[in-house]
Structure formats: structure tokens, C-alpha cells
Length: 79
Figure 1 (spheres, rainbow, N blue to C red):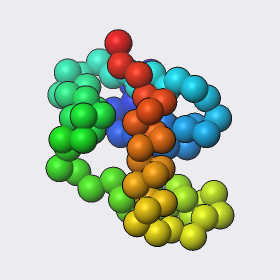
Figure 2: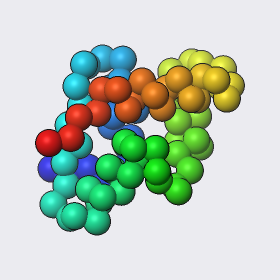
Figure 3: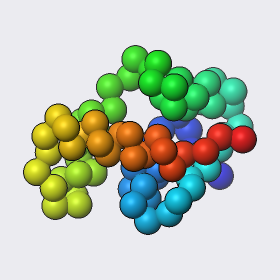
Figure 4: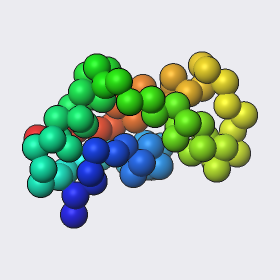
């Protein structure tokens, strides 16, 4: 099952598992995921991260948003 060019599932499971593998059939989707992993993507994931944090009962601050994104990058594996 492809994840598309999204990080939703990785965001939601970053505190539950030690590894998340995001896969997709389309090379363009994989390229966008790799750009995000390498912190080169222009897409703004902050609104999505903020929503996930609020759903988890957190008060969102810029520091928390950055921490969540970094935690997510740490668990995402490619290959």
C-alpha cells in the first residue's frame, strides 16, 4: 500500500514504533518523501504536524512542532 507523498502515518506512529517504512509505486511520490527526509521539501507540513499534536493533547509551540518533525524523520527509513 502506497503512502503517497505524505508523512501522516509516520507522524502518528513516531512515538509507537522505532521504524516506519514509507513506500509508494510512483517515483515522484518517493522523490517528495526523500526531499522531506533530507529537509529540502518546499511543502509546509506545519499545519499537519500542529493538528497531530493537538489530537495528542499537546499545546503547539514552534519548538514542539520542530521536535515532532525531527522525531518523525528519525523513525522514517528508506530502502
